[in-house]
Image (tube, rainbow, N blue to C red):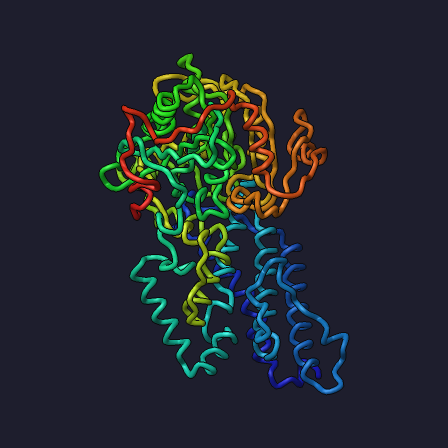
Length: 581
């Protein structure tokens, strides 16, 4: 059937124009002087694309739209042209939005699905043609285009989602009622539900490793965990988790608790539980977090265990804080640590992935002026930023499931933790974004003054175990590798499989995934990986073997937490971790 005799040709022509309209709407928004981009930053200035390349792209787009339409017609016609009917627009690898059979069973929805994918590809190619001032602007443009396309997907709307229609018919409208109820409940909570919140409670079935809070100040509680072995390493282990999230990502449940594993390996484990700042803590800055965080904790741990030096571990921004504190100690001529472990930590901020795309002078100046002298960067804003990095998985997946299909998300401890957001004091957040993300000053010896001294990571000379994860979208592993060039001691770099969280929380007992080690430490990151040995299973066992080299001998496990000066205040996990944003 030719296009000229096709009675549906006007509809086809309209659908072909949708991609052009989407592109015009997107670029029109970016070009407007009032454009406010999702994460802040300077509006992107876009030049005119090459006319010949633009014409060729438009011609190719129109030809594919025509072929897609003809393929739909041939599929429905007896004895249709099989070659013509085989034309199909496929989603990108990992895109599960259209995997349900309902999208293919109906020619209408099959066409809607493929037309959207074709339009999305057209807009992405237009973005590549668009002249912008630099690579950062181009990457910001790609990010914004992805946000726009994800939001416009037909799976997000009732009229264009066949799964919604089928469920509504089968349930006689009950799924619609449930979806509305879910939406109302989430509006009251102020966030999208990602898991069954009622299934979990911190202290009941999350963060259950036995221990006690033995010290607290305005910014943190220090937990000492009860031993699980008769004898322990003489040197205790201090864990500094990120203050941007709650610590129990490292102590979810017994079977996937890194904290419990470390205790089982014969370590006396202490952990910093950061406070979820409220208005009364809105004046604290970076130096306060160093002094009242790892520096205070190290003093207590050394005194309780009667040792000169301890082993210390930092995760994500907790690792950045810990390393900064050790640089302060080095400048003061103090040695309190025997070894350092950093998990998915940035010390060099030259490439921070998509988080860094929207941190520029304009956005930092805005933060300085609003919360830089006091106030809070709210947990809701932080959670929204991180969710935007994986919008299909962490936003639109739940919009479709919760509100269109009326489903309740299943119980999942990791997603419960992900939804349990925390605030940050404004001065801390503003200093962190400007001095580290924007200026990348921590890597430069003596450039930053912290706690009254000039910081130099090169003077941190203790042995270090550095873990990065290969699919990390928050701490790119190649950037984490640069820490081997900044720290002054012997370093062991290990690359885990998976991402920022799943790559770290990879229980040894399950023996999943793999990790790479023993690459060429004198080479760059990619050459290191090319020479590295892949080992099956969890990096936890490799780290435990490494840590034993810095145990300082053995002693009998302590029967009670703390000492005469630092006595148990309350059972673990303590009050601070239960405070809501």
